[in-house]
Structures are given as structure tokens and as C-alpha cells.
Length: 119
Image (tube, rainbow, N blue to C red):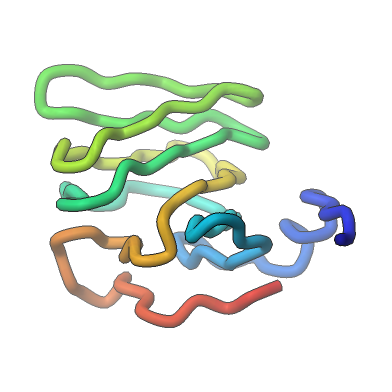
């Protein structure tokens, strides 16, 4: 049982769209990542996804609307809902997801991370 310092965790990496595991509980993983630019349209068939913004602003595009999330805010994207994260500037994000969640959901490409680093 040790405390986690988010600033220290985010200081350990500079790349984007590459989540790292910083904790695990009840089959869920707590992940941190930095985002910049556009991701791609995808969905998660079996998992809900929580995006908590630590620093910056993130837009989550849905087919019928766009939701902007700022520091200290979060959104839960329900399973099966197609979405696309967009970060005009660098954003620091914490994610809460089942351990089975693949970062690219139903799409596999060069951004797919099957094995995540633990920091």
C-alpha cells in the first residue's frame, strides 16, 4: 500500500497514445497517458471506458456530438459506443478500464498496445 504521485508518473514519459499501468484493483487497471492530435474512430465491444483529465483539454467526438472535457472532469464512454479522442494540445489523462481493454478497441493498427508498461 503505497501512494501514487501523478506528477511523478507523468514525468516518466513524453510520448503520446501509449498508456502505462500505474495501479490495479478488482480486475480494473488505472492507466496514465499523454495524448496529442487525433486518434481514430473505434469502440470497445465489452468494456466501458473512463477518461479523467489531469491536465489540458480533451475532445471526445461521437457520431452525433462532441464533448469537451477539462482538468478535473471525466467522461465515461459506454461499451459499444463509437468515439474518437482529439487533443489539440498535449493532454494528461488517467484511464480506468477493465484489464482486458485494448487501447484501440475494435481496430488493430500501429497504435495498438497489447502489452503495457507498468510504471
